[in-house]
Amino acid sequence: MMKHKLGYIAVAGALGLIANAAIADNLAALVQAAKKEGELNTIALPHDWCGYGNVIAGFKAKYGIKVNELNPDAGSADELEAIKANKNNKGPQAPDVIDVGLSFGPQAKAAGLLQPYKVSTWKSIPDNVKDKDGYWYGDYYGVLTFQVNRDLISKAPADWSDLLKPEYKNAVALAGDPRAANQAIQGVFAAGLAQAKGDVGKSADAGLKFFSQLNKNGNFVPVIGKAASLAQGTTPIIVRWDYNALADRDTLKGNPKVDVIVPKSGVVAGVYAQAISAYAPHPNAAKLWMEYLFSDEGQVAWLKGYCHPIRFNDLTARKKIPSELISKLPDAAAYKKAVFPTIEQQEAYKAGITKQWDSVVGSNVK
Image (cartoon, rainbow, N blue to C red; front, side, top):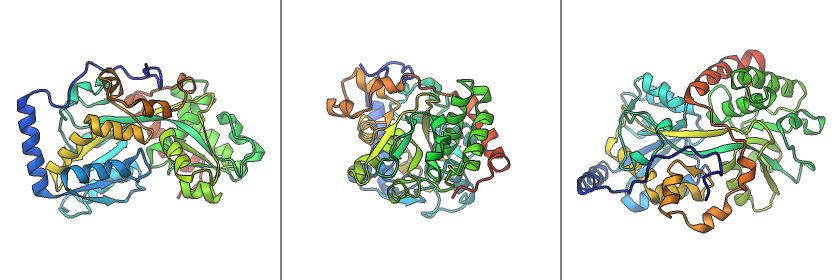
C-alpha cells in the first residue's frame, strides 16, 4: 500500500525478529553481556533527528544501559575521525557505533574502522544497502526538501532554480558543512541534479556551480541550518531531510509557520547506515544497540520521527505499522521522482564536492 512512497527499494522476504531458539539464546546472552558493560557511546545523534530522542530513551528503558551521547551535531566525516582519534581510548569519548551517510560505510570499512555484525533481522534489509559481510547496513532514508520559515518568506520556492531569485537574498542555507556532512553533500548534489536535468555524472560540477552562483547573488548563508536558526531568521530557508524538517515543524508549533516543500526536480533520496567501531569500548552494548534499531520496535520508532525505516516493506507485509503513522507521512505524489543514487555514484560525487567546494564556492560553512 505504501511501496510507492519514496520509490522503495525492493526488500527480500519477510523475517521475524527471532527466527529460532538458537538466535533467541544468543540474543539473551548478548543482553546479559551488554548489561555487564553497562554503557554505550553514540555520536552524531541529535534528539530531533529521525526521532532519535525517543529511540535512545526506548533503548535505555528496555535494557537499563547508560548512553553517552557524543557531539550530536557531528557530520559523517567527523564520526570516522572520532573513531581514528580514539583507537586507544576506552573511555566515554570513543564512539561504539556510528550513523553515517551510505557512502561513508564502504570508506570506513576500507580504512579498517569497523567490525562486522549481522543483526537478527539481517535478511529483511535490502541487499543493495548493506555490506555482504556485515560491516555496515542501511537503516533509514528520506528525501531532501526546502524547509521554509513562512513568517519571513512570503512566497516559498518550488524548485532549485527559484533559490537564485533576488527575493531570497541572505536566506538559503545547508544543514551541514558540504566538506564533511552527508546531508549537505547530498544537498549540493540534488541542486546539481536539477541543473543537469537528471544526469548524475554531471551533477557534482553543476551543484558546485549552482552554489557558487547562489553565493555570488548573496542568497547563500554560510551557517549550518537548524531549527533554532530557522526560527530566529538567520536561515529562513534550509535544504534539509524531510524527516528533520517535518519534526521541526511539529516542535515549533506554528511559531514560526513552517512549510516543507519537495522540489519539483532534483528530488534526492538518501540512505543512512549503521556500523560498529572496530575499537568499540563496549562491543556487546553496540551489538545490542543494532539489534534494537533493526527490530520492529526500533524501526517503528524511526517512522514516528518521519524517517522511512529500511525494513519498511517487511513491516508493511506483516502489518506492523500503525495506521496513524502512515497517515502522518507526506503525500506520495511528491516523491514519485525520487532518485536513489548508488553507492558508487555517491562516492564519486562526494569526492568531487568535498574537494572542490573551497575552490569553486569559497564559502566557509560553520
